[in-house]
Image (tube, rainbow, N blue to C red; front, side, top):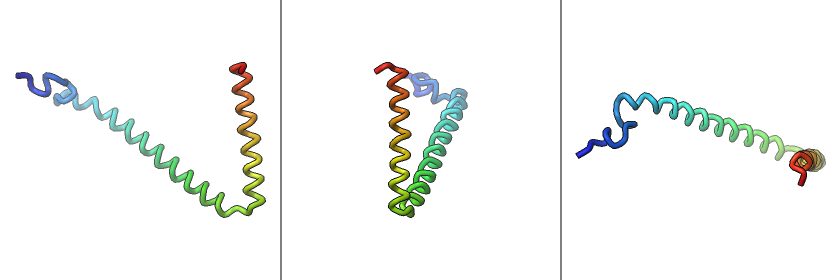
Length: 79
């Protein structure tokens, strides 16, 4: 009968060192997600404290920016 190390070499002691790279990638991904969540929470906090006029001006600015980017993509893809 085969042991688990014979079936899947990643369970062998020698191959266990290769999983360190995967762990580093996972940590980087989780750290990026955590940083993104902190930035988003901070931005929401700042946005929630803005006056209504400032919120409307920001919405218009972002709307124009998004429209321009969509137009750029459409012109490049020739839709």
